[in-house]
Length: 610
Ligand code: SAH
Image (cartoon, rainbow, N blue to C red; front, top):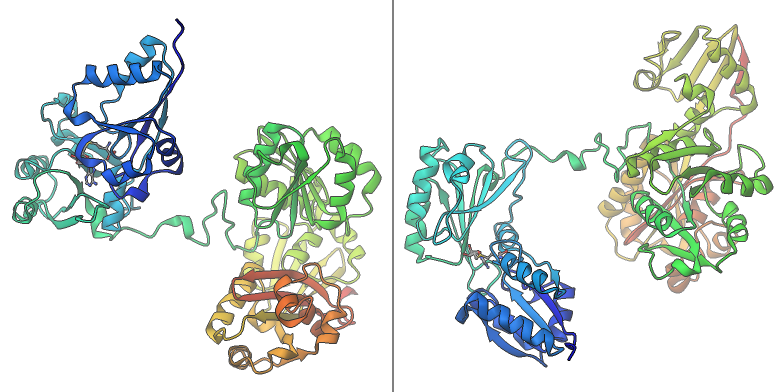
């Protein structure tokens, strides 16, 4: 007779607290017919979550008996959970069980768990890897009934100076400390012993190699403990560079002025692999929406997702075109080029378009490289995927600054912008260029170009460029900051959000000429106090005026509470006057929203003859 088919799961139960099992592990328990659990370090409260199961404590069994149970229940068509403490991969004695099941051709799955080493680190509130102290962790044990290979003797491992975590080794702590001292680890090395991490009777003993053994014995701890050794326990490492503003990971832009792409991005893909790549890229961008065929809805792991009927790609592309500042197309370039034919207008209005292959090897800046930011977008995409940005605009290929992009990025205004074409071609000819600008800007942007010279430093918001007997003036924009907030928010909180948004977009506080909000906020103490502390006029607009302004991001919350479509965007636009432009769309941070509009150009500026 053919065997009925059951199901075998090896499940990591976690370190002890019953809610530290994974969701998948919990689901396996809930459905289990049989649970074989490993002794005293699996919390029996977990067994209550397996209402249908019969239980068996494997501490009382020899390995062949455990195997026998697994196999017979499986063949009887039952769902069997083999529950291990922590994660099965650490000292779980699972390999012999896997091997035997493989030999019998019986399938099984392994569900990981939170190992006691991580529960101990959590109890100690320590990071096991700290820059400047240790960037590696050795997970090991002292020999017991199970021998440890000679090449892994503790003295040898200790020589690395890394963080050490020892399982199954608390019984002879003084011997252990002695071996580490003999290996040259200083007596002052911090050590912590965590007994039953995450259990109700968890206990922590801290000391040094010199005194930990004595302290642990005094605490009565003889087993069921994790030993953590290393300078990381002192927490005196260097600060992590991951959150350093000047350090750029795939997922966090440095806020240096060269910045990444800013704006709303749509990502489109047409194949399963493409969808996953698009989702990976989306997770690394500040404001990204996935737009996919309906058939991928279920599989797409994105927070912001829109779908269109399968087969309607062309229509979906045309619909997305005017709605986004940037499009990242994860597909063959040819498909994209055919779509572009119908929609592109000019480089001042078209969104940035970047194309990326499914593997993420290349990110091609296809359209609106400078002004639209496609070069920056392609560069961002390449950084996230670890691929290469493909940039073809002449000034970038030759590493000359692109003036239009420079001005937009640094919030300068050139009027009329068309006159820049001459300047750009002067640069391509490598004619000498004289510059008047802030020294910091010169050094970041132009210092590497031999034909560019800083002839005068100026900090008055004006940049002068001279080449070939002609000159151009760029003027820093002035801004209106629109703010919305929940009732009762403090001045300090509003200041913090506003400052962060300004910094992110490279705008200085003194360039904010006015602060604006809604009239219903006139008694909002935090708001008025903050505006006063910045020494700015607070302009408040009535509901009728605010609601007459068209904004890109209407606010559901403002609509509900104040019957206003928008506060921050509408107020910023009203304050900047009739030809003001929204330069930073609404940025919401829980209780405060901020938007930034630029005032219209003054009459002066633009090309000058000198
Ligand atoms: N697979 C388990 C380890 C099994 S070996 C895991 O990943 O955690 C058993 C050893 O693990 C114990 O001797 C002890 O050193 C450690 N251990 C298990 N649970 C623990 C807990 N809650 N607190 C501290 N140490 C624990």
